[in-house]
Length: 479
Image 1 (tube, rainbow, N blue to C red):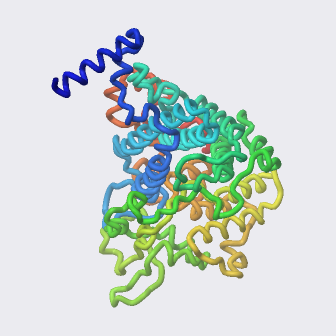
Image 2: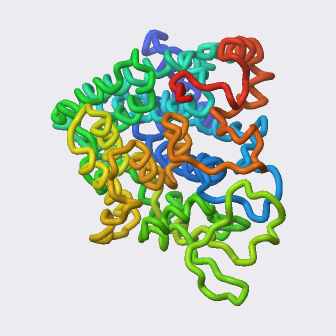
Image 3: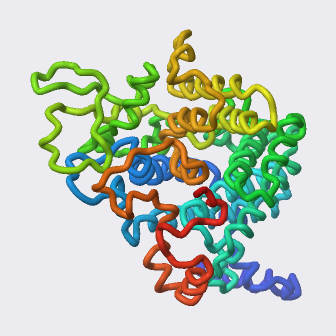
């Protein structure tokens, strides 16, 4: 008898012996396949992809132009730095974040299946991080019905930003209560905090502060009161207390944790630093200039210091008779860092609350924020730094936000979000700017969404008053 026949008869006998109680579905299960992923399976890819997309797409390709950090050169007309916002500028961000939102949902479901409260809390935190970015870029977006194609929801409705923020803040409250710092994370170390649950909890609450500040102009949210309560109860709501603790991805250069710039020379190809960005640093006599930019040279190739090109400049590039400063390429060479939420940002949040009278020591938190922003880049602050009239704390929100602008460099869309919230720092305009020289308040919904989810798209456009770059989002009420 052949081996095949013996195997077949053996299977039949086994089925008879079991009284035919096992189904063929059970029989066809592959014991070498894992039925459920662990909640940690997707964690490191999510961390890396979100951090790298923030810096590469959100920061380098969009925010750096909008916020006059640098500009394409030569560029005699058009471009994002002149507020030329194309219909599909935000498509990459939309697609990337919804992709990772779907994976975070799988991570959350796996955490529920394994009854792992720490991974549940982490998934809630990451979900909040991703959806906060999406809603702050576009305004009303799909969230409650998003990533549910498995439930037959292929055209999700658009939630209002108010509804979205209500849920995001609830996510962070829930996550904060879920963490069990007495137990360990049982899977391979994550690349952000190395499975340190206490640091994940601090990230959750630091993100909570960021989002409360974002909506603080909506007085009905009582955001400042909530933030004050959190900061007055650090045992209940621990936040970052040092640069070493912060959510900053250390890119090792070991594949797959590598620089988002596969060709690092592209980081500064056809780019120059802006006059606004460098002139302030020159006024500050700031040591970060060496980290951020190269020095300019004159027509004789002589060093002339840190000199930029005005964003949205008028006329031909021939008017500039010098080789302006460009981006320092070492920022994107392996190993490097990808900031997500820094200790410096937490300090500036506290400084603003103190400046507004909710807590004390505004000058202390302002100075700590500046020091931490330099520490992030391995720079020591000069002892006389705050003796300078351009850097000394003067009691104003504008002074805080100018330094926060530099602290948020290389941190995705955050500079742009904070500018829209406060109107600071004051950016120069030119007659060459489009959109009447007005900073865009949002990006257009992607073209694919207009076609594939047309009914819900038309509904949301009617609700928000038009799919326009000047349509303000719910929290953006600064005149």
